[in-house]
Amino acid sequence: ILTIHSILRDRPGVLSTMLTAFADAGANILTVNQNIPAGGAATVSISARTDRMALPVDRFIQSLGQIPGVERITRVSNELIK
Image (tube, rainbow, N blue to C red; front, side):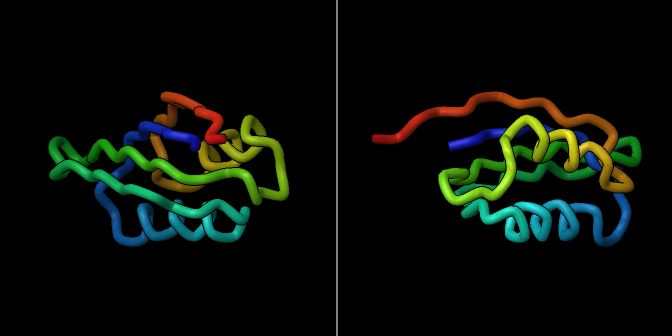
């Protein structure tokens, strides 16, 4: 399970684009926690299963950082489930 923490601009479609990127990569989203935007940005945490992803997790996180409106992205954890 991969958990990321991000800061997203308060613009339409930024979170949707990020969630679509997870789905397109083959990740199964488990939780999404978004705070109310303040100062033009909101913090968002996403946890997802990554066992079916086509690309390495590090490269996937880098690609998330390239999404317009993503100000910062941090990997919180990458747990192995048995």
